Length: 453
Image 1: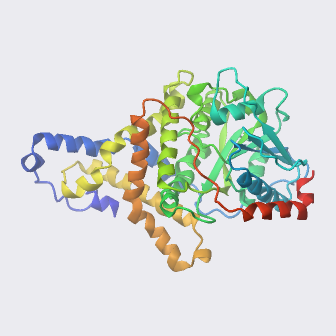
Image 2 (image 1 turned 90 degrees about the vertical axis):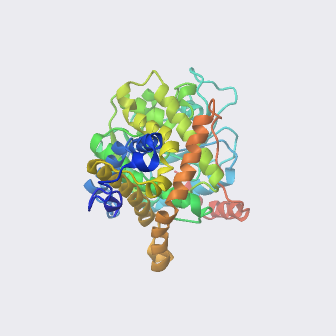
């Protein structure tokens, strides 16, 4: 459909059309530039396509390759500012329950916080409060500062053979993700790994941001899986959660990158690890998170990502090889305010183009649309929603695609127009519901055995 609509296949209806005669010389030149700039993210589209077609898109639930008892020690590390203590407590307890279902025995949850949140004092939970006076050797800030504090002598309790799983405050483990992590560690072929995160498994606060985030699920199965499974490197950046690292490797890499690596510390960390020769791989299974609760937070989140990755690109400590993939992303972002109007201009002001260019544009449009629909298929369960609602939800991204692109563009424009980084914007992740705290505390009393080693 996209190849036909773009003129890549079928009859050439514009072969005798003279755009200069109809639109004028300079408008025609400007529109041609706008159309051709859409080809900048072509390498990303190819990587997404390869990730989808080369690997199983509906794998069965992973099965454990080794016993869970007496296996490698795993530290699930959650970093928080301490402003959402109920959310952290609830999710840590819930994740411990999931670990118990798998039979995982050799693990701990480490909550790293700027402000004390009084986690239960048990053998399964360790709360690390980052002192307000703590300063890393390079003056690293925000989340990277807290992550670096965990690696300091006297604070770090892990050996080089242990493993760290990085989670956000709202990240929910699933049985498949824990099995995938254990299998990844058992394989022993890589020191760093990452897997899929979905955003629509539980209560949805904002439908528009959740639908906009469906493309991220498609990208996880596309370019992320291709880069980690085939290239064994974070070629197109690196996420901040569902990150699995060898503890010794993480201490060698560190998070002490200074201010330039403090906004997108995840991307900076991944590219630095690649620079040092560490090997990456894709992890089976999925974790659950929530999308931002409002379009305004969505835009602020994208703004921070863009600013942080641009700062990473400008860093002199990273070689050009490691920045090749993010350079394509940045060029795509910079050109996006110019290319997005093509949504309206292409049907209103058609231009004759080489058949090869039309094919590429149709391919890119088809891949983008497919990633949204595929993300919906992987995020929603027709058994839970019903087949009619499921089909509507899978079709919704196609209808709302222009809105999603506009929101993304607003975040990019906001990032590009800002003279300097506005800091580490924290989006709301906690629902206002006091009864949740009571339920968690009662569960802690009902099943104390889960919290003991």
